Length: 101
Image (cartoon, rainbow, N blue to C red; front, side, top):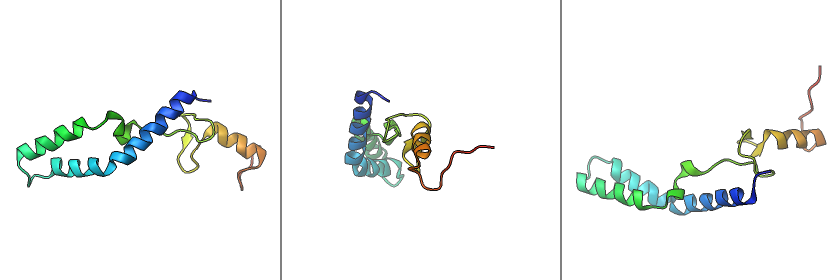
């Protein structure tokens, strides 16, 4: 299980990403649009850089909702491979059985 501080840090980052998402999109559109002057585009880039670093979506880590594990993560199920195996062995995942041959 991941440390509580790491899990809470990731939750805080997710909240910041959500808060600044619209502002970030607007500034990126201005910065990439060639119809604006170079000064306006540069000013948009500076404002974008002034936003909190943790408000960037690339800083969010996908973590298992059960254990907090950051690796071996299945996006569709929002859990790690280890938690999935435990749940499947307990019969909590419909249609999934342990393979044997």
